[in-house]
Image 1 (tube, rainbow, N blue to C red):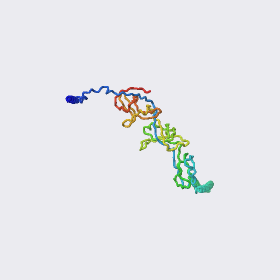
Image 2: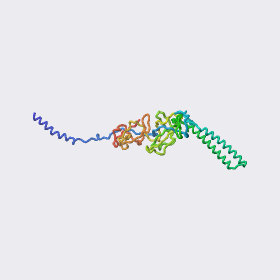
Image 3: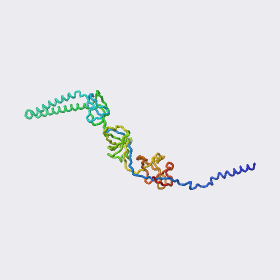
Length: 348
């Protein structure tokens, strides 16, 4: 029994070194373990597609002005209410005429008297009973009287503070009984027809936008309409380095209010694009969004793409090289520079 125990111990001691040295004598890695991975690829079928840029902005009045008094007086007429549509010439604030009517009567009397004096001076000059200087003096007096009458009428008209254009009386700033000095505000008038959508465009987008370019507009209220570009700034905003673009939209019933958020789609031209599902996109380690494909040398590559349009069955993207074979599976596991064996499968 003791001899058997000594045999097993000795066998274990001599076998252990041999087993430990076994890895050094192990067989080399077979070619199968080093095989190039096979991948399924589909050809990128690029098609000409109109590229759109979506610009964000808001609606603005075509014109807006604070209507102010040009003379002093107490408001006695404030019948126009806020939000009321008015025509050019509508009285927004009427001031007490006070002594202005009397001044007109006085000026009219002065004109009549000066006219009589001038007529008499002309008759005397024609008969040779007076000099031409007297007639000229009478004519000057008549001119002064007429100028005084015109000034009195202008001063009287200033008591009627009127709308300078058709629009909406947005805000009343002077009520009945308020005393207005020269330059004091009566109210704020806005012109909403047409309504303006103001957006900011980048320098790259600006090259494709021209005056009178038709664009589609979607408002925050859900209203979808069309308009035309009427103004393109020639100077960039110093802070944002973008250019102001104005789109004009007909608004005859003033149904579109100012201050609404708007989304504007502008066509930037035609470019080769691919219709694909969003799930096929890959987020690169550096934050770029794109796809992985196999180049002509069977090496995996990455390219950044831009989403240019939405469709019912996917999205349209640009940036994919012509003739590229896209990875149909395993995009998240294969990295750029990996050699693969592509298996081409045509999409149906």
